[in-house]
Amino acid sequence: MVALTPNAALGAVIGSKPVPRTEIIKKLWAYIKKNGLQDSKNKRMINADEKLKVVFGGKNQVSMFDLAKLIGKNAK
Image 1 (cartoon, rainbow, N blue to C red):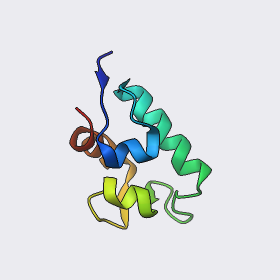
Image 2 (cartoon, helix red, strand yellow):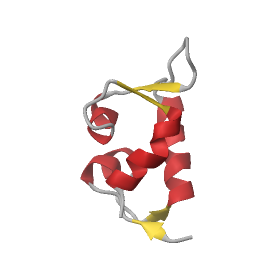
Image 3 (tube, rainbow, N blue to C red):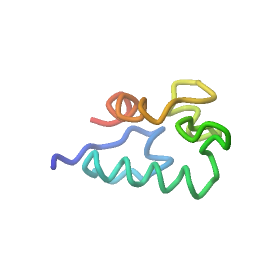
C-alpha cells in the first residue's frame, strides 16, 4: 500500500505521519467513535466537530460513503 501524507487539516485528526489509505480510514473511524460523532438516528451520517469540519470542507455532516472522496482531497 502506498503511504499518503495527510494535509494539516487531516493531520490534526489522525496525525501527520504518512500512512496507507486503509490506515487513514481506520484512524478516522476511531476518532469518530471516540468522540461520538456518528449520527444517532442515521448511522451512515457523520457529524462534524471543529477538526472534522475543516476536513469535510465546511459541512456540518457527511455520509460515510463520502469519506474516501474527502481523503483524496486531504492526503497526497
